[in-house]
Image (cartoon, rainbow, N blue to C red; front, side, top):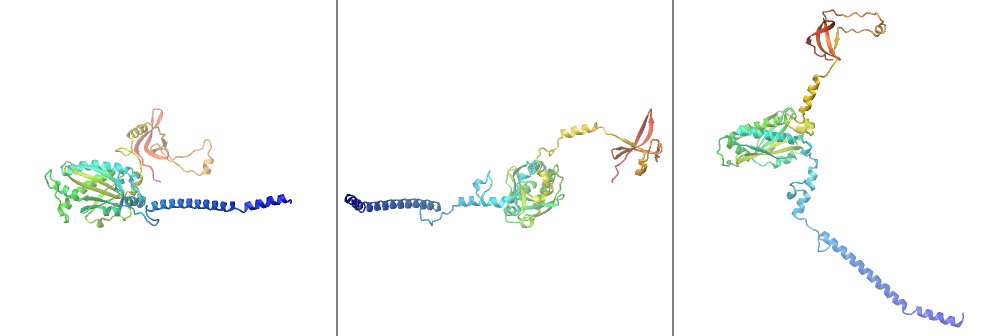
Length: 381
């Protein structure tokens, strides 16, 4: 290496060992400090967002307290949202096992028919202007219904004879005093007098029981086009615990009726458990309209008229014999089979395998004729 090259290498090493290296270290520390500050800002923003979600404003350990409206919405008891909308929250979970009455579309037709019939029958019963309206039809647990009955009230237990089960009818206090006032000749235009805090008298129970018999007769007539059933009065109770006809958790149909007699009236509720309606469940599931419950009189008349013009063959049987197969196979032209019949023996007229008539054989002109004497019943096999 020449002396000139040695001097250049020494100068380069001297330049590398001076100020540039410490300056680079200071720049790296500045960049690291800036990155750390950015991370702290990001973490701080996340903590503030978390604090806002947890309760806002304070430290991360603060919790947010729900107000009463939010608690009602969570439990499904939001009164403002009950009208026209389904329940939500925990209440919807509890009621999820219930069967909606909309799955039994014929029930609405039956209760509409009941309203029309009750309007006429109660007018005749009270000799007053009575208007009956159907407020609501809903499904409810039997235990919840008993707990919701406003007392005092009269609870009627009735039995569906053909279905071998029971139902419940509730008459509220306003309806009881109104019907007593009307039947005992109370003046119109005055509200029925209410005497609370005492049991119902024998006269009140007797008058209400007469009205209940009228309603049960209308309820039976309302179900007649669907399925004939007789609702029989069983007993009258004033304590809901003595009117238990089903398990508290069982579902039932509740129909709420409003009865107005000018300025008097009250409510009447009919409860029918789903177990009681089980024998006619298939009929209640059908979708047909009209008072005749789906019967088309036009097609019935047409089919009845066409049946009269239907042609069916008739066979005149003189005698029937049972022969062994070997003899049947040996029959030839000219073979004779003796019949146990005479010209006076009765002749059976059959349509297919069914005997229809019995008559006597004769002759009319060039034709053999049979005169029908009487009808013969089909033999039971």
